[in-house]
Image (cartoon, rainbow over the protein chains, first blue to last red):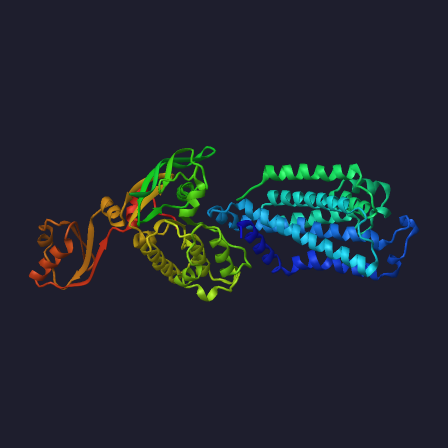
Length: 246
Length: 302
């Protein structure tokens, strides 16, 4: 087994030893979808939402929330703690480069995020008749762009935070506006024009809309693709610029 | 053959010169100590040897390898235990060993290594549940897992209680007996004196002396001092007449005789001839502590 796959397996094992992380990333999103789905009014088409049901809108929002949890809470805290505790420095003295450890953490986050997404899609489909994405390729692309832009922001937080605790705090502060504009409290369809315009320019506002568009069978809007790419370039670039191994 | 060669090493951080023209060579199978106060440049020096820092000038070779250009090969032959470097809190001892042994071309049997380090009953314990001494032993185990030719141990016993520190010393001697050359960074005199074959004393980025612990002491001052309470009055002239004696003085009921060479034998012979018994006899020699003060002009700040 290669060092990367071993490290990824180890990081995954460690992830499952953090009950809070497991709950928020893997348990809470499906549970939230189920709770929303149990409200009868959310399962009936709503004329105000253009004839779709609230539960249909929430499937991508819940997926986005799970991505935000991983990218803003788990990843920065994990990485900054590894730096603070000298875990990266120790790795630097072995034949395996610390880059591998970062790669393993990103792979693990991606795997957990995919797991959460698949659970939400399946529960939506079989429990509440949320149709499977009509434009699957567009859905995958939208999901990848949203996930990578969020992981870039998470890495930027990890780069700038002075400590593991600091990274956790910054991540939590960013989490709420980002999931607000993703529509967690009020889906984009119910936002005022001003709020929705702001949402268009946030990574998960653009991400959720792209997922919704793909679910309905459309390709994502150019604006939203550009916004997510922009976040990847800016946050990823800054993260690379300010990245510290020790 | 020297296994580690450091020649005219210089490392600056901005205007501050952390390591200023440091040179030394470590022979195969030695326990070589780098002794100095905090901030003397010890860690920067060993980090250059470990390939973690690029020197601004000078050369470093480990088994003939340049740590800067052949880093990959260096990592196979050099094991490092760094200051304040942990493993993830919830990683189990056995998992850490298994993971790290997968990094090396030719790892040792990690279960056997854990037995040697007296950690085999902790295989299933998470890192956060280990005591300070156990964490340090795991740290040594991880440094040795790749079967290195050289092990660098940086401030290994800092923060350990006296018993754990003594256990660690026994361990280090055991590692050397396996044929591993050891570079030991420390600011504990007792540790350097007990373990090291040779010591480089570093102060303010410079090497001020390299010698065996005994050599360092005698180079600075080979005077000895004997204190005792004579059972009967004794003419000082009998003692000052001895070639070994340089000075005799009295402090209360005690006589203090200072001198060199085989002072104790010469003095006790005179006492015996004059039927004087020396009560509360004490021999004081220059310690490595005194040598350090003499070499650097100050006490090592523990």
